[in-house]
Structure formats: C-alpha cells, structure tokens
Image 1 (cartoon, one colour):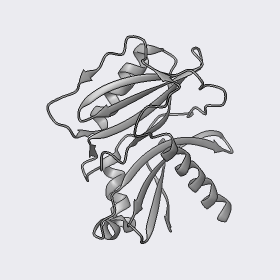
Image 2 (cartoon, one colour; image 1 turned 120 degrees about the vertical axis):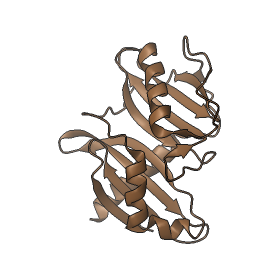
Image 3 (cartoon, helix red, strand yellow; image 1 turned 30 degrees about the vertical axis):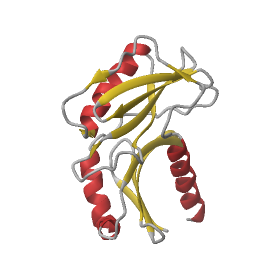
Image 4 (cartoon, rainbow, N blue to C red; image 1 turned 60 degrees about the vertical axis):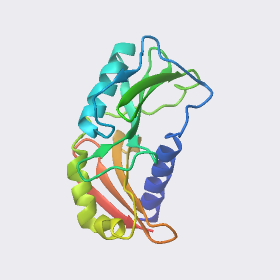
Length: 199
C-alpha cells in the first residue's frame, strides 16, 4: 500500500512540476500556432479547453498523444470544471518534441519543447474527460470539507507505468493552507474512482 501511495504522490508531484506559471526557457512558439480567443468568458470548462487544445496539437503533428493535463494555480477550478488557466501537453514521436497548450483567461497559446521526447510516456487507451463528474466524486470523498476550509481543488492528469503498459491517472488535490490535504485518484481511461489519500 505504501508503494502505491508513493507512486501516486510521485506522479502527482511530477504533474504539478510540469505546470509552470511562465513558459520554460527551452520552449519556443509552435509552428502555425497563433493565439486564439476561445470566447468571451475568462473561465473555460475542461471539455471546451481540451477540444481546442487537442485540435491545435493534432494540427501540429498528426501522431500526438496526450501526456499531461490540468488547471494551474493561476486558475482555480469550480464545480462545473471551469478554470481561467489550463496547461496541456502532447508528445509527438515523429517530431521528438512535446507541444504545450496554455489557455489563460480564454486565450489559447502554444509552445514546443526542443528537449523533450527522450522518455515521455504515452497513455494507452482513451482519455476519460468528464472532469465535472470526478470533481463531484472528489467532493463526496472528503474534498467538500476541505473546500469549506479554504482549499482550492487542483485537477491533474498524467501518465505512469503499470503492469499492462501505460496508464493514465487523474488526480484531484486539495490542500488547506497550513492544514490537511487530500488526493483523490481516478482511472484515466474510465474515470473510475481509485483512492482517496489523506495527507
């Protein structure tokens, strides 16, 4: 059990580490990726954000696979899975690069990472995308109590190894300032609840 807990925590920390407040120096504008306004609202729901970002990633390289998704500390997520700040990453084996798509206050922008591709995991199978449903489950598993104490949910998706190859994992992290925390995990392909890990 401790090994599983350690794996989830390691993946969660890795996912958070890949959600920078400002672009890394190794990144450069993706070819053909012009800034795009997604709508009048600053907060964009996950489904809209993912569809727009995936379209841009597919236009960049046809072989892209998703490796990391999430809202950032600049955009708290609400119960309807809306956030003003999303950061999403795809990997292209052909290009040996990743493309990062950020959506801030309704504006989409892209960059590519020249140094990526040496050991980027790719999920096998489909991506489960009902973030609103997972937020509801997370609230039931203890997240609501922490939100009432000031915690802001952080939703992240990343890919890690398992016995059958590569498994995508959804994380919802809750942290009360100088207080308790909770991590709720879901299967990345089915959205099935896996664990609620208090901290």
